Length: 247
Image 1 (spheres, rainbow, N blue to C red):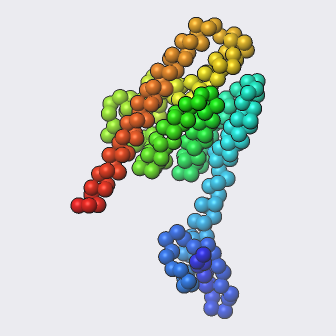
Image 2 (image 1 turned 180 degrees about the horizontal axis):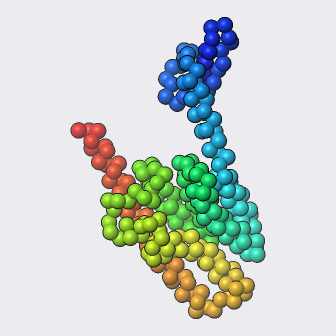
């Protein structure tokens, strides 16, 4: 590792601080003035502090909740509250990030990773083919965060009208709400149906359980359509990039 040597006065001992990302020297010692060195120290410290932002700490708690829920999967009285609490905290961490002005690219990345981990866990536990749903979600995550960055929800300006209708206002539209419900609520609803939580605990009529499955499935299919558009768009981007390199 290369260290940057801060020299304030010739007679004083040098102070070593962590390097900036754009320092390319290998074995050389780089001497900075006091102002530049202090800026480098602040940059290094701030990068480390991001991991302890309140919304990110909430994210770590969500990971723990998902892990415990997975361990207690066969016990609906434990699984449902743990998993639902993880979903609720998904909204809390976003609010905390905006309220405390602690938004970060790492936080945006962590938030989606935890969502995928939770949904992937429940889909895989529910059905043998559940890994297919999880795989599509992870592919979309790679495509969007690689090509569009942390603000991916606001970067679909050139997408088809139906995609923009889903993504508009951060999913705060009828279609967006239906899509999010299909994405997040459907696996929990299916768990409740399979383990009779809906009928035995919540006393939901059978016809309403089936109707809920149909409506939420429609939302999930809409989400799947958007996901496939994202994947195809990313593949086209990769192909075009290769063609540009050849030319």
